[in-house]
Each structure stands twice: as structure tokens, then as C-alpha cells.
Length: 442
Image 1 (tube, helix red, strand yellow):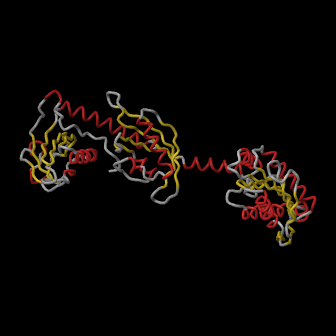
Image 2 (tube, rainbow, N blue to C red):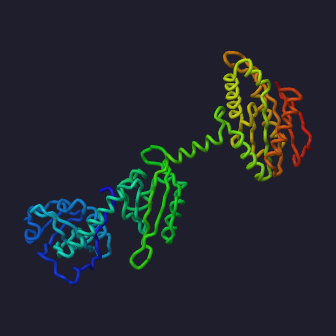
């Protein structure tokens, strides 16, 4: 079975409605702990048309309607696990006449020392049959509707037991029917599991839950799936919370599209560096609230004689040179550093967590070194040179201020002639506000 049944298990003390006696005979039956029929009374012929020898040795499920088998199994397990070993189930048995007969079974489990189940099978009244048929029709309608939904649906009680699922849920989570909600949702990423548990607790506290984003890592190894979870509280006839019903929507494609759009909005298409807007935003986040006792550095890079490459070799060659510069910068950066394309031939490197001005200068020197070489473009050697300036501070600043300092340092390097690095420490830098030119070995 692929779901928990909309079962008909009843309390062990159930009686016929209005005290009516059930029609037809009562059939005694003995079954093993796994439901194998061991003995049947002769009265089964009057109720179901079978002779005892036609039933003995068969599994009970052979005679139970396929739609009723899940509820029968659930009631059987509940009976065995109960403290008194008793239980009542109502459903349809197949008769020898080719019809389905509504019956009620009262089961008593002998326990570990006597692992057999004593059963009495009785027919139910016409009124009860009509009620069961209506309940079945409604249950079947809800089942078919839930299976037609494009979202996964599940029901869980306060003890964490799964009492209902639809087919779509198992497709989404990649897990077949499980007894507990923890097992059913085992594919939720470990880091998102607290979100799911908190959402369940909220629903159990009688509050709705909307659009909790969860990542699933499927056991089949098909990659990560992104889902949205919604929950609603379920209550019993007295208004007491009894559990929750949830919907799980697969929004992986939507999440991927959103991520792609975010990347397109923040990344330069040619160099795959941050674009100007994203660079400014990152600088602002980095320098507006310095972390700890260290400082932050920004390195401003301007390619020398780039216009000549475009004029002599064409814009396609210029584009390839920009891509080469971006790759060299990324290979030089520390973990946590970022590079952005600030203008046509200008790049900005954001370096958070730079402890000293000397460390900022060393970063800029490495950048200047990798941008001082000969590069083959269109099978022709091109001299790659760049003017590099770096600004460092421990102060909380506006992004424009620190970038302006780095820009000023870059122009000082350009005035001094490449290769050279100029350090601008700024207020709080410990070295004054004057640029310091640092030659780079060429």
C-alpha cells in the first residue's frame, strides 16, 4: 500500500448502533499473529457462503476488499500493540457468491505466550451498511481528490504518527509510506530539519504555518529539491488539537529560476565578476560595520593601455583580455575576498578582515604582480599592466568614501608609473592620510 488508509478501526468497546443485534450468524475464527486463518466455525457458510476448509490456511487479506486492507492491517497492528490486546474493525469480506459483505470483527490477541488471535465475525445492519457506504464514498472522494493535487498532502497526529498521505507526497520526498513523520520526512536536509520541527510545533499549538522553505536531499541521489511547507491544525469534536494536515509543494524550478535571476542581476556577463551595483552593495555591507578589531581593504585596479588593445586588435580581443584579468584576480584572492568589474577596464577587489595596513599592501602587491606579464591575445603578445591602489581602514565608513580613497591611490600609482602600488590608510589607519607609494618588482 502507498498510504495510510482512511481506516474504520474502532474502540474495543464499540457496540451496534441503538443496541440492535447484527443480522446473520456470528462466526468464530482463529488466526495467527500474522493473520493466517487457523480455524473457522461452520456458521461462516451462512454468513459468507464459504465452507471452513475453503478459508483455513489462507491469509485474511485474501478475503478483505482491497480498499479496506490498509485499514484492516492498521487495526491489526493497533490491536497487537494495545495494552489489552483487543480491537474492533469494520470492513468488507468477499463472499462465495461474488459479493462484498459488510462485517465487524472483534479480535483478541493471546499475547507472546499464545500468539494467536481469537476473532468473532458478524454482519452489520442495513442501516450501518448504508452509513459505512456513505463514509466509504466520502473517503474515496477525498482520496481521489488528494491524489489529483499537484502538492504532497499528509496528516500527522500529536504523537508524530502519520495517519494519511497522498501519492504525490511520496514522489516529492522520495520516501515510501512510513509510520512516523520523522521517518516520512527523512530526506529533509539536516540544516533545515529544525525549521520543519518548529513548524510542526507551531501547528500543534493551533497556529497556521505558511510557506516554510525546506531543502530535500533525495535518497536516490537526484540532487537537492526545494519545497514550500504549509500546515493547518486539526481538532477533534471538542475543539482539542489532535494533529495537523500539511501540504508540501515542489518549487525547485522556481527556486532555480529565482537564483538565476539573482545571479544575472548581480554578475557581469562577460567576466563573471560582480557587476558595479553588486560591488557597491558589497562594499557598503563590508565597511559599514567592521567585524572585530581588524580592518577592511578595497583594491582599485585600472588596466593600462587597454584602449590600445581594442583599437589595434578589436573589441573581441579586449573582451578576452578582460576575462583573463578576471580569472587571474580570482586565482589570487583569499577565501572571503570578492572581485567586481567596476567599469569598462576597472576592477575592484573587496577584502574584509584585513588586520593591518601592511597586510592590505601585500594583497595589492600580489594583484599587481599577476597583472604584470605578457598575454597572448589573437596569437599576438600583449603587455598586461595595471595601476593598483589600495585603501585600508578600521573605521565604519560609507562605501563611496573608501572607494574614493582607493581610486585616489590608484591614480597616484598611475602617476608614478606601473608597476607600483599605492597604499592609502586613511583616518584610523595608523599611517596618516597621505598615500604611500610601494614599488612592485617587475
